[in-house]
Length: 538
Ligand SMILES: [Zn+2]
Image (cartoon, rainbow, N blue to C red; front, side, top):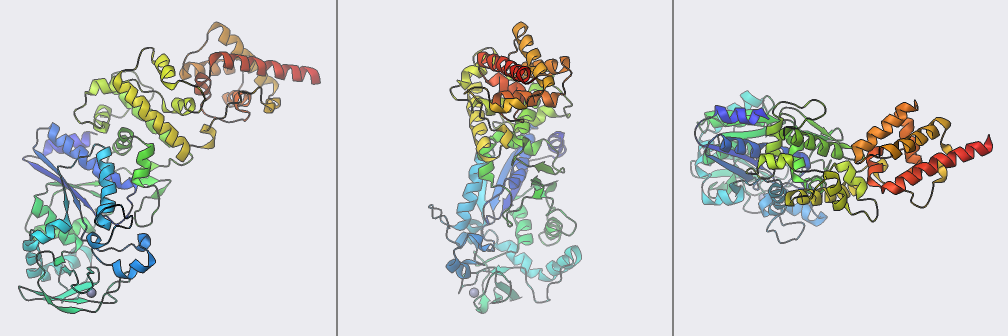
């Protein structure tokens, strides 16, 4: 995490941190990495005493280019129009397609503790005339812009191409128009049927003023103009934009040469890969941000993005795996280390900063947060599946004292997360159906060495009853070692006795979740029943 503090210490003067997004559809969880990084940069700057403004823009003058969410009759009419002018497909009181999808995204931001000082909408900015000076500069320097595209990106525009897109006064589309001339006041535009494959222009053409919202700059120029307009000093960018000759290089060159301003500092960041696939909004793969946010609480979601450095890709596959429980365990380990407690395994330097920046409230009491009692996620995921268990009472017993208000809130949040995880992602082995109605018939599969292990475990319980999942886990290992049984077969014996199958969740936590008298009785029954059966057949 030292990267954010290091960045904050090497800049001077007031800072404007910016990012913007095209609200083209459902936003996938990977897209949240940028905003989380943005927020941490702003927090680090403020912690270093820098006056900081955090901006987030919605590029809603971009053309509608994804037909997946349109009804068939709307495709021909809406494709190519500015997203700000396309109706909201959900019909839930937003004024446009852009407002609907940006609204979902902004809600997720708020839930993650990301609160920009200001959101700006390009559909609001253009009509004010604030972009007009940049439109004029771009048109006056059209030859230079074409030369930059050729030099930086090897993109060859025709000599008549001008860097502005008119909103067609006839059909309202912006994705279908091209400007071929500029007389200092007006541009000559054509709305072409075949300019792009995904939208069809109406064939209008003529001279028109490009100012006051009648036209927009193409993306690379709009980006550079935003930097000038808002005085942006730092803007992180996804790796896809930061490649050689890519969007960032083009906008950097346009900022310097056309708008004559040094571009902001870049913080390139890698992607979040879900299940080995790159998350992509346009391909509709992966998980929607608001769906994942229902399973992973905000602080763990921030932690997921912040644990690796920005330039490291994140592999995350929650479906059918223990990735979510492991994420909670890692978070808890960082909390414990921050509290100064001893933790198992290696912990990277800067762990306390990672923990601090993962917290929802930038002004939270770090030590109080680090010391707060957090029940193990995997344990909760078992407890919530056992009927009749008073989860809060069990967790207080585990802590050894009453939970404070913050700890109760953490418990409530984790219980909800555990239930959501079981419903959405958990592997079958995490789902629990304890056979309370007597010894499962599958117990016949037990072999002699497994019976000996069960007997040893029962004997050990009488002298040293374990409390808590870790203690149970140790007792299981000890009994397995004493009877020379490989741990895998020891666990299988326990799963057979309680679940009637040979796999299951962490056995120590399973037994800790159950009523102690029931556990002891069942273990004794299993050891004896097997012995009787073998005795009878021998
Ligand atoms: Zn048109």
